Image (cartoon, rainbow, N blue to C red; front, side, top):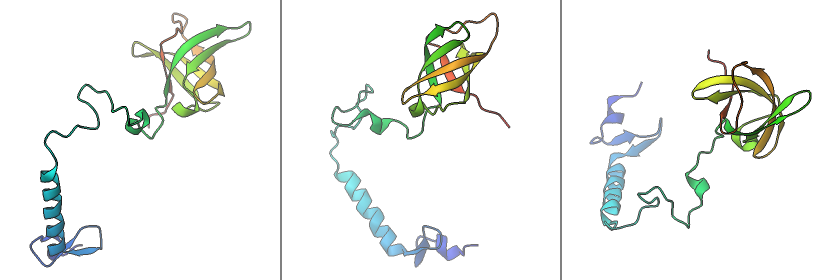
Length: 151
């Protein structure tokens, strides 16, 4: 349990990161410096991302995207074979898909089919239809998400 002196900014010491103790005078000096820096910025400075949502052309798009895969893709075609139908998915390793994963195909917010990934490339995948309700059809544009279990 921390003692009260660690939380008193006007006291002699202030605890900032766990057990590291920083003198309050140094902390106040850093806050004054940060305030002066912010106040010295020009009021008409251009933001990194424009108000219309368009990024600065000098900054690549991946800077503003997530580091984590989206775990979703989009159906871009269905190949009807003699023995089985293949679902072609726009999304592969980059989207978090791996061979053998079971995924749900969604249309209008409802799961209409289960597919199993059989071939996954960098940004495309092929899957076999595992379970399709008789009244539903898989068409291009429907979303594909990795099936997860809710505990």
